[in-house]
Image (tube, rainbow, N blue to C red; front, top):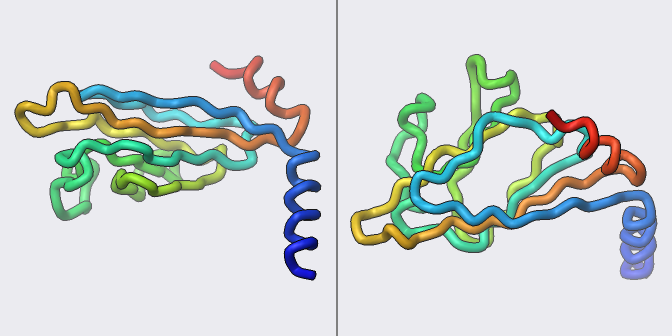
Length: 139
């Protein structure tokens, strides 16, 4: 049946892929500079905890300066003219190609939330054998 085919596809994928994963725990002001995950087939982030003020955002997203706090910003042309901002929400899973340049904007929180943290589980998926090569050649 269909369940068996899905299971076989998952087993085939697992046999040919390697996953590298890590947790990001960001305090107020925490950010990640522009970067990419060279060599990864795709990368992703699962938002586990997002402070309320960071999740609310700032409204219109017309320029980089108007993008909400703590956004994951995807830059298809290396950030020179266009971007897509993903609002962090608990339970959101964002997937993108490993070559896509991206950054995470500084997280702003409301007064009195100095202990707030944004927590995400991030990962890269590589073809087997490519993971070690990518790690050894990172800048």
